[in-house]
Length: 69
Image (cartoon, rainbow, N blue to C red; front, side, top):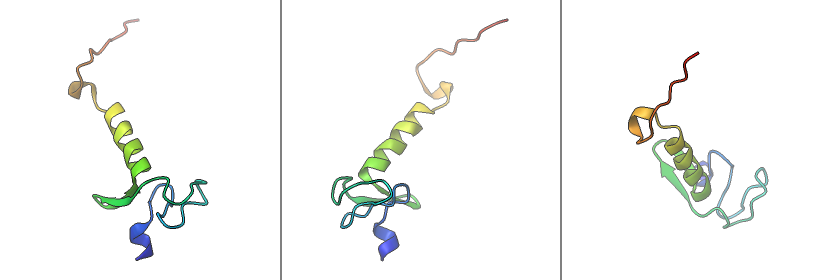
């Protein structure tokens, strides 16, 4: 069961923390399943922010500026 309670990104476990990321036990929240991955709350939030920031311009309200030479 150990691989199912370990974050795939930072190697965090709720009970032991992560020596790779230097995180103490309990500080990154719970490890949950997201689609095929297991992520701690901190890494899941970072992935969601990155996914939001990297959306194609068609899915945002921002105007696309084209620079002409």
